[in-house]
Image (cartoon, rainbow, N blue to C red; front, top):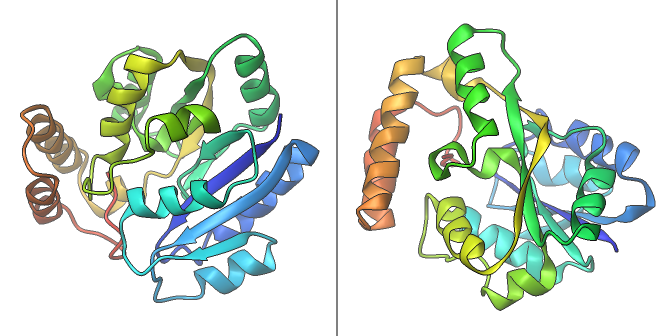
Length: 236
């Protein structure tokens, strides 16, 4: 079984090369490719990703669902592994994923920790061990068999935010899912740019609007009004 790592990006020049190098170093021959799906970055993300050996797919829109679908459509691997650029993978990600699939799991994610020792962020991360939808999200990475992803028609591109939750909701009705009892490391940059309380409130508002089936565009507008961003790539 081969793994295609798919990374949606917008203005990630500061970290993309190191992330790809890490994947290449620890992925070995099982990682058939690293696909960077760029949402029209204003910086040199694409150039740095190419230098690091990634396959590039250029997308005109900054829509993470669209970007990840574009990557999946070109992927050669049997397993798709969706990774946010600011998430540092577990060093054993290949063996963890292949072991999970061998045991019969169609999909899964990791728990996470933040690259910060702040108490409230450590508490946030502690909850990712529990199998609750509110505790999931794209930052934890997502592996899924390509055949399963295709059967579900991928991410819903109308979800300009919360696309990971919408996909997980459908995925878990149709496929087996494992929360790997290990950790990836997530950047705390959103909390640096905003207070912990502000981020928590924005997450709660977005998740509540999602649960009440409100328009993804309205959710995105509400979410962006509550937070400051270091670039234009909306994150959730």
